[in-house]
Image 1 (cartoon, helix red, strand yellow):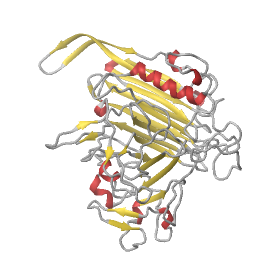
Image 2 (cartoon, rainbow, N blue to C red):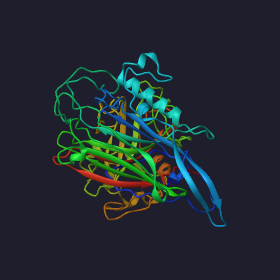
Image 3 (cartoon, rainbow, N blue to C red):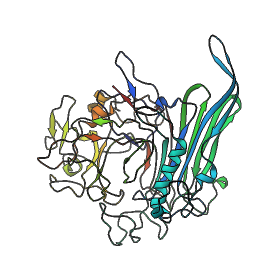
Image 4 (cartoon, helix red, strand yellow):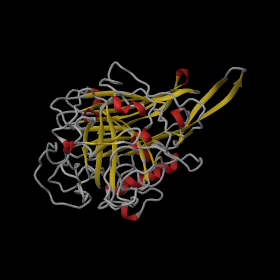
Length: 471
């Protein structure tokens, strides 16, 4: 996905989407890429897998699966190159893998280089450390800094409120009644079965590999998918040609009605979106939105004071605007136009209500403007703030969808998005009187969230040529 930025730019989520992503920026401007593998064109692929429970932790490993972190990283070794005036012919090629399946299966209590003693028997800490270890095996030296891999993120929306596993805005709380969260009972927050088909070089110079599996621990996906959850990411590329194509599939079930699957470009070092652990990823330069609003101090890993902020574009045409003149609490306090004019939400003649699905504020903000909706305080380790957008003509300036159905099933699109131009003009909470702070975006994600449904839902989408372009 080409993301053109005339500032240094921002985070992007696609929720419930079909995406075909291609191309880059054109014209006379000077462009640079923030990712280690611009456009996904590098033959030597770097891709990893991470699974999380409802509050972005592990909790407990699935039996026999090890810690839910894995990687498929390799270099292409070619011999007997024959050069002509028009092309290079590879007579003999092979893939040199950098991560073994034994390393992918590492789980709590199993040592590996660099494992901190305090993480040995803690599933949450072990997974975070394992990601760093896999990153060290996959790392590619580059400037201004090394990078590691694209990240496939899978998340389970079940929450057993009687478990006490998830903190409220970073603060540990005792168990409580279930309420609105899906859960079939004890164990509903389990990690999935993970099957890894290591990338192979096939006839015709095609390279292909995949991650897939299910949350139903006693199931075998080879027997069919009726009644069970399923996820799959297949990557494929022809040697020396084009982009890697990542094909995704996500299916919910009665027991697991809320699932999320994203392909992420995360920070190569430090925090990434939604987490309070050191991570590894593809973003060797962290995009920045000028004058972006937050509490004025940088994140430091303290879950009681850090806030995870998201701007999300939802292209599912069935998704309605919850923001309206009669539901101002679901709207941001104001909208900012491309020419930086503020339109307040009580200006019913001018505010673009249909451009906003939902806005929710961080629950720990002290000076919220009423009426207000506050975000779910449990689904991240720290408080969170969301601005969820819908296709609308007001977003045309930034290259975003302008009408319902854009890019949906049967309407494949190529998106070139000015993510940072948009993100720098979205409202996010900041304590009154505090100076505008630099806001660094540590993750850019594309993918699908299937929210709670009373029937099995299936989503399929493809991503290729993903890039984050800085001008």
